[in-house]
Image (cartoon, rainbow, N blue to C red; front, side):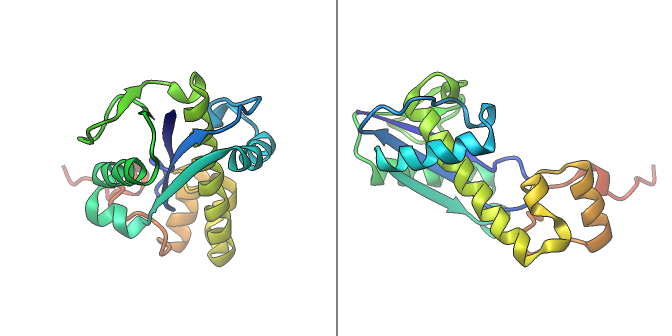
Length: 182
């Protein structure tokens, strides 16, 4: 059995990092890289994947990311997935194992390997649902529109309102840096 692993939320400057491991017990039609699917299609597939698989989700808060760093969080998440899901092989989307043994990697595996596509969808839907909930707590940052990514609108909202409790303070946004004196 293959366990596919992927993450969502590595790049945003707000919200959790979400990692998912997935072992498909039954085939699911229509899987692909979550970024290539519409939100509606991801939601539909998410429900099918959950019913057709063994899966494990790991989340790291902005505070954990700020204190440990993104690479250490990724390593911890990978290790937890390997511990929680029993598979013959583990495949992580990308080109780094982050020092975790017993794991293979493949660039763009989320668009090529069904189990990794399924993990990609679980991670993305979980991430997006979580940040939409946060948007209701912190409406002035409009997280539901940009999902925490550093879009032009998001940067404008940070300039206007400052940082929220779910922003990653260790992520330096170029547009918000103080001008250099030199």
